[in-house]
Amino acid sequence: MELNVHKEVAAMQRLGAKQLRGRYAEVFGEATTANNKTWLIRRIAWRLQALAEGDLTERARRRAEELGNDADLRMNPPRPKVADALRATATPAAVLPLRDARLPRVGSVLVRQYRGQTLQVRVLADGFEFEGAVHSSLSAVAKAITGSHCNGYLFFRITGKGGDR
Image (cartoon, rainbow, N blue to C red; front, side, top):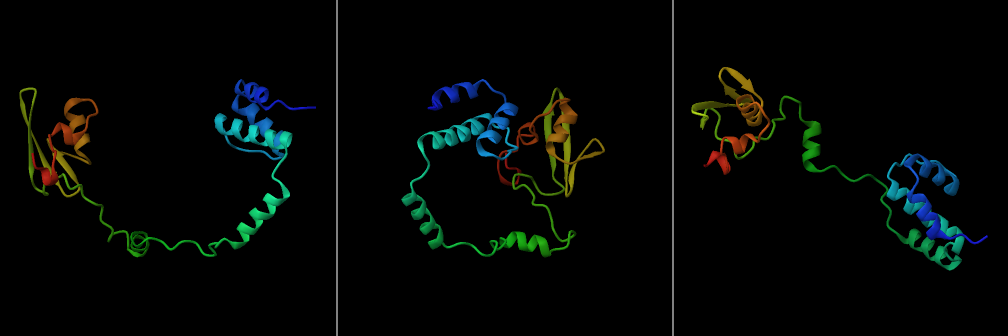
């Protein structure tokens, strides 16, 4: 019986991910946890075509084996990057979060006119103080002011390094 791969692919387009996983198991003889329909259809179509038209020639298999034997295989995992090594050896108290270069220095006060009010936000080492409350980010302050989410840097018009305006 001749298999028409094009008709099979067209039929698979109408199947859901669950049915495609079942079809994958039929064709490959093993289950998969993949849910990506496009990937499943391509893999099944490739396998159907290989079964219908024949797989690799024996010569191609031997050549692939030769290439595999000559390849430099990694015997050890890659070394960690310097930052990862430092992070692993440092104590949690010694690791300081990176500070955004756009922010003004600690202790600075950001002033913004908004709806007829003059708003003042003090820059702290670990957040931002607005009306006695400490917020973790400028966006959180902007949300407290406006009632909706907005970018804190844009709201306070911070554009350059160090809070240059």
